Length: 225
Image (cartoon, rainbow, N blue to C red; front, side, top):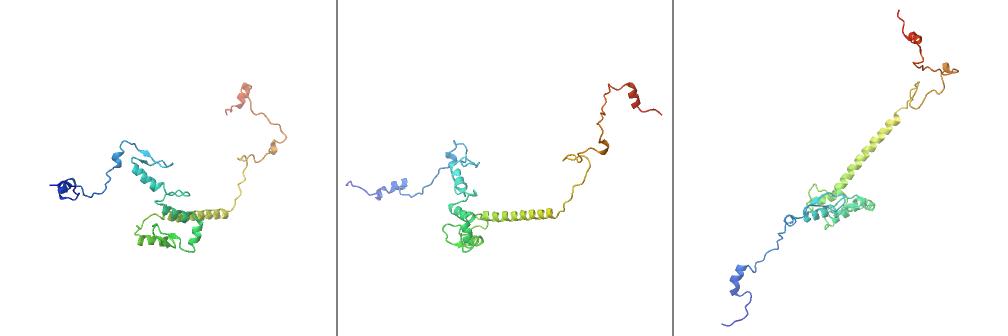
């Protein structure tokens, strides 16, 4: 028998390959669990000023930051889930040029970034997303526009109430203040002395009890009839 080099597919290695599962293809599985790997680390807060969320795992913090703090409008501080939705929000809510162009031609882009459909208004885009992209009927990407309409309605209602109050105040006749004798909060009504006190010196009506004698006290007592 000669000794030579054998190839990996040689039948002599078949029993060993079956036992060791050499050529079995397995997928890569990540068995790392954040809750078990970071048990020693205590809870930590979010680093964004004003946010009070606390986390015990780094994965939860990354998901929170990407959904709440990564895509934020610099003018109204509204968080958006993606950069595409943030771009749509800025152009539709804070761009006056977009509002002028939307009156002339379709300007409302689809919420799906890969879709090239442009709608003429919000309702048409909403119907397109529900029918074509199978969006749920209660999705909240255009919720800010509804709130804006509601706030405008509340504002107009308050303005109407204020106008009604102004009209009532204008129609209300002006009445004069009643004329009163005596003292008031603004001061004395009459600054001069009455006619019976003019030309007379003020009399001292205060008398000390020590200066009064017994006869004077008897005169002040009522007489028995």
